[in-house]
Amino acid sequence: FAHTGISWEWGIVFVEAFLFFLGVEAWKWAKRVWARHYLKDDVARDPEGELEAGGAFSRYTTVMTTDTAASANEKGKRAGKSH
Image 1 (tube, rainbow, N blue to C red):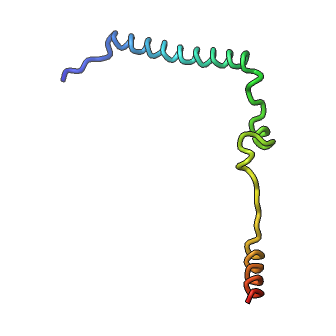
Image 2: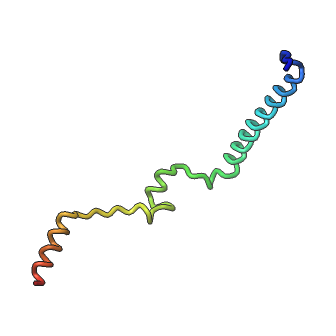
């Protein structure tokens, strides 16, 4: 294989890559500006606070504590009384 140095064709590759990344960043900026303007009332201001205040997952965030030693003793007492 005869290898040669970088030629002018690679300039096209670098320019196209630069234009692609420039387009991606412009799209993200435009989307952010549009969302900030048109969705300002729909966007959550404090997502953690809203979840804690009974948001979408409130039925899954209940806290239940049990004393396993006390309940085992009570079961043993009840089992002993029935005999």
